[in-house]
Length: 190
Ligand code: BEZ
Image (cartoon, rainbow, N blue to C red; front, side):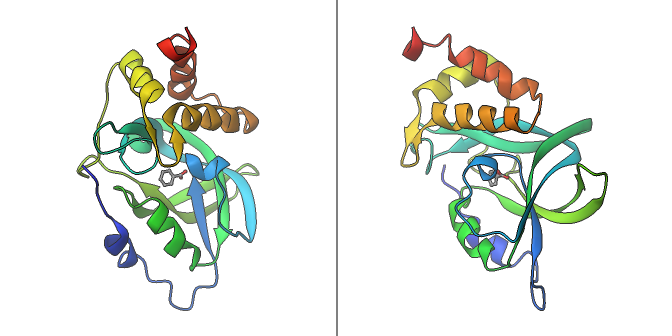
């Protein structure tokens, strides 16, 4: 089911008098940077794990055959590595539209690589949104990603681009790299 979080997000944070905001990216925001930013720094957030548990009906799949894209799930002790961008508040108008299928903006504590900390915003698709798919066997997730395709292109490209971007960041995300490996066993490559 397609969700639409644009209006919810518009009412979530007040940017009045604010000239810039840190945004933490852990998925497509790492490699598809189609927005202006003032500063960019590798960062991580604690207590959250990246998972291919969100359905994509508008970018990497269709309502009839949704793809799977990442969201964050709470996991004590986990650490999610990503890229932080300092952006003007206006940027959220574009990103709210781009990520409208179930993602809401939350405030998070981020840690930069030099150990300094800062609060920022992060888009998360929680389990109660109508496009949420939740956990499944890794092989089933890989098969779904292998076959899905939407207006933004094949779902497998999303996974492969994310895996490449995470390697460049020196990340070791077991979930993402396992799915990348399984993708090479699925029929499209056979
Ligand atoms: C991200 O890359 O942080 C992101 C992932 C999904 C939706 C919105 C943002």
